[in-house]
Amino acid sequence: MVGGGQLARMTHQAAIGLGQTLRVLAVQPGEPAPLVTPDVVPGGADDLAALEALAVGCDAVTFDHEGVPQEHLRALVAKGVAVRPHPDALIHAQDKLVMRRRLSAMGIPVPAYAEITAPEQVAEFAAAHGWPVVLKAARGGYDGRGVWFLRSPDGADGTSAEALVRELLAAGTPLLAEEAVVMRRELAAQVARSPFGQAAAWPVVQTVQEQGQCVQVLAPAPGLGEERALAAQGMALRIAHELDVTGLLAVELFETDDGLVVNELAMRPHNSGHWSIEGARTSQFEQHLRAVLDYPLGTTTMTAPVVVMANVLGADTAPEMTVDERVHHLFARFPQVKVHLYAKGERPLRKVGHVNVLGTDLDEVRRTATLAAHWLSTGQWEDGWSVHSGTELGERV
Image 1 (cartoon, helix red, strand yellow):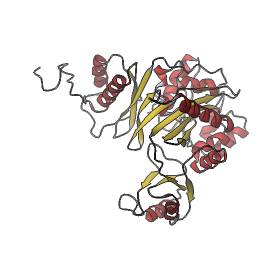
Image 2 (tube, rainbow, N blue to C red; image 1 turned 120 degrees about the vertical axis):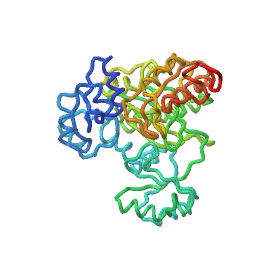
Image 3 (cartoon, helix red, strand yellow; image 1 turned 135 degrees about the vertical axis):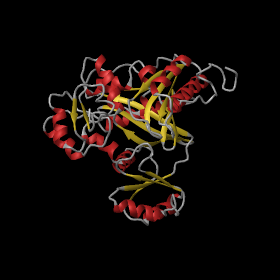
């Protein structure tokens, strides 16, 4: 697996049960995956020699991020390496313009968009589609990075839209403009596909975003009718088939009054699928391995009526209490919560872990997941509960 982050770390955990060893390409030995797997190749994704070393003796090469140069991937393919997904598919997750053009040609709904190659083109796009305009880097960017929400020609943060575009283009950033979609909420449809062509889909989930990144996933998406859920799964399966994806495909969607609109694609394990570790018969991590190794795929049915995943984000101010102490107190209060920590240093808004909570009542499960993630992040209970007394704060201990 190219990349040593938390996705590789959790994929390694799934590989153990399959009798496999996951070799990872990692820049630093202290990254999440190298801390748990003995088979590590040092190097970055832009280092062809390192990629070639990674591939020696491997059954397949796959990814925990899309930031790998196409020319390097094609060099591996030319040497007979099974790169999964193939570069011809992966380019649609690497380049938003390529993805938008291909999906549009397939007749799949996407936001109105245009390539931006000159500063004045943002105003021209807005004249046709209205403000606000969503400006995006065509390549790179995640968790809100590489996205600028321009409400007017004045732009954002005191920089005019034209000045921002001029600065980004001068830095060599390929850009596109998109209309700001009026939506009800954001959904995600995740599927897996093997080289044999077998495919499987998990229930469609709702993703909750704050400050440009996912904070919660609700599975299944509450209140989503069967017709629309099947439409989302069918759309994801069609994209996987027509792009010839091997492995996982996550399709991020906007739900609007008129239907579904595709926002982004990811061809790897994805934050929207972390709930599946305990919440589905086959987790996204095991399924990804099954797919890239061409095993028969596992069943994706849920293990509980409701599952909520909440990301643990680094707090603005690091808690005095250690992570281990926070985990201890969390388990004492909520023994049913499943905790997944990534062994990453804490800094504001950084994803350092997640929790999964299973149950039957969405409100209760979501409240528990929210409290648990907030506690692990900050060392504080949002509901005023005291870890020292087991009572509400303010009561006599």
